[in-house]
Amino acid sequence: MKKRPLFLFMMLAIGIMMMPIAVFSANADTDVRIPQMKSQPIEVLVNARKVKFPDQKPKLENNQVLVPLRFVSDKLGGKLDLKGKEITIVKGDRTVNLLIGAKTAMANGKTITLGAAAQAVNGRTYVPLRFISEALGEKVEWDKVTKFVWIGSKEIPELMDILELKDIKPYEHYFKGQEFLMDLCYEGCKPATKAYVVSYDDLPFKVRGEAYYRLDMANKEGRVLIRATTTDKGVMGTGFALLNPKSKARYMPASNIAKENDGDFRFHYYLVSHPLDVESKDYTIDEADYLAIRADYPGYILIKNPFN
Image 1 (cartoon, helix red, strand yellow):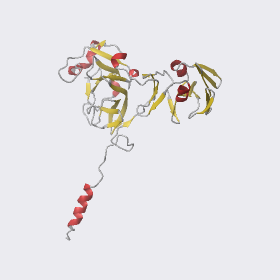
Image 2: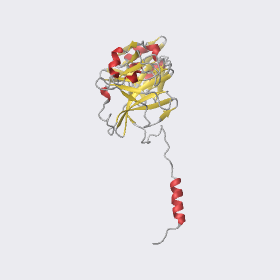
Image 3: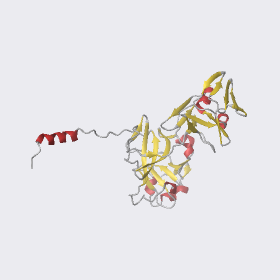
């Protein structure tokens, strides 16, 4: 058999060495290593506190956030007058006039072209949030990373400043057989005696200066994950636990499935279940009553499960 020239093998080896190495990019839409996010609802915050919309939720249209008209009077202090399709909003010396379906509006005597018109949906009137807020003198900022609309101050409070501590005894049964998880830190700590019981609507908040913005569901190659959007820059991230009344508490360290960041934001992933993992393959997120943040804090942080 005729031998191949040595230089061919050398060229092949050099070619392999020079092949481009896949570089992780948190912002690359085509990076298959980034878990796929499930739908993330838009949240509106006034002075860094989340606004509750009991029935009709904010929606995005033509890159414009629209909110139910009642929000304007309840949160922005505008006085409403709705006659047929004509909407008039007055706040102090400011006046806004809109017509449902029209792409122009009047703000303090000036004609403004709208990115999205006011509209009627299921018996509710929706209006463009940025236009209304700014016309009434409120500062508005859209954050595409968190899908937050910020109105007014963006100063996020410490959790201890918005909630009072409760006795942890009513929640101790969740830790049966896993009592070590009640420690407020990982070494040399005593079990927690108090807890902060947190509604998902209490987010965002800070834990010793690190902000927690939102929790969302994600998946990657069959894995079910929780993604925490935070400013926690720790390599491992703060650990979570799933508290299920029918089984042992499950500790979830931040996973190495993906490392992702965007400016000051950090995204930590926590594995809920995996089809190849004996302990978690049949676990579903709706089995948990609470998601617990195991942090060095005056009380254990118990977040009521927003996914069940």
